[in-house]
Every structure is written in structure tokens, then in C-alpha cells.
Length: 115
Length: 114
Image (cartoon, rainbow over all chains, first blue to last red):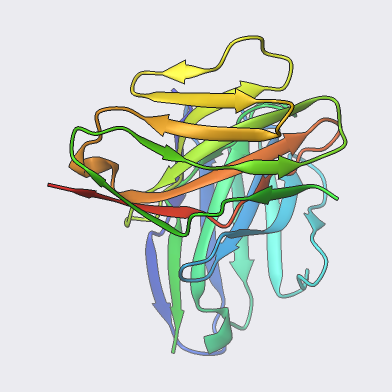
């Protein structure tokens, strides 16, 4: 149980385009989903927290207009990187949590390369 | 402020040996959860083990056990009988009560030698 999928696993795009990443909890309902960014050889950096049906809460320094998050259902959250630039190239990973104070289960991550 | 410290950036262990990965934390909250995750080169974060601050016994999950010393604020991960597939990055995380956000350590890269 507790499986989280993420799609796509790899994306290469041109600068200026927008990229959408999906995060799905496959066998449980996730009241909360988290989006992280990870640079090579570094720890995970929380970008934002999303709850189903409400606006995402962004961490300090994360541009909400740049990284659009939608949590339309209890099993799906999407992250859209708008007008992507090379500095947005990174590993993006989501996690899902059934209830607060419970274990977060992570998706397999998405590697984004912006040319 | 909440903080997680993993002092070992890299570790080597011989196959079939046991290895301990260190994790210390700093929190003033009386209630919190401690987690260990494994991140292989593929990138996914695999949940390994959880320890609640009020749990009387150390958590165990198969070959993984958590050496929880509350007074010392440490939550070391012990992997017994290491396997080549255990080679990965390992992250310790704390979830203080009243918050939903993990605080991750910087990770320890483990390499299991044949």
C-alpha cells in the first residue's frame, strides 16, 4: 500500500515553455500533498504544501506564480512550472499524506531539464 | 528552531556487515516523529522506519532498526546484514507536533562493498 506515482519521470523542454507534473496517490486518499525540489547531492527543499480544494501554501522564497499548484482531488495534485528557464532544471518530487502527523509517501520524482 | 543533523556525509560498509547511520535532532517540542528514508540513484524516496517520541521501544522493520535515545536526541538507523542494494542516500527527518512539515537532514551516502 501507500503508493504514489508521478508523471512524467523525465521532461526536457525549451526555455519559455510550461511544464506540468502530476502526482497521484494510487491506493489512499491524500488530504495533503507536498512538492519538493532537490538539487544534486543536496537534501529535499519543501516548495509548497497543498490541501485538496484549497490554495497551496508556499514556502518563503518560492514564487507562487512561477510554480502553480492545483490539488483538485484527494488523489491528484499538479505542479506547473510556468515559463521555465534553465535555472528551473532540477529534480521535483512530491509526497502524499493521508492525515496530518502521518508518514509522507513519496513519488518517484520528475527530472526537469530546461534548455 | 528545529534541526536535524547527519554528521556522516558518506559511509562504506562490507556486504553482510551491520552499519549505523547517525542522526541527531534539536527540538523543544515534547511530541514528534522521526523518520528514515532511503533514496537510491533512481531518485525515489523510500520510507524505511518511523519512531514516535513517546514510543517506549525502538522501532524495527526487518533489517532496519532505530536506536532511539531520547535524552541524547539521537535516532540512529541500524542496517543489519548489509546488501549491495542498500547502497543509497539515507535521510533522517523529524516531524514536530503541531506541524505538517518534515525537516530533513543533509543525508548520508552509504556504499556497500562486495
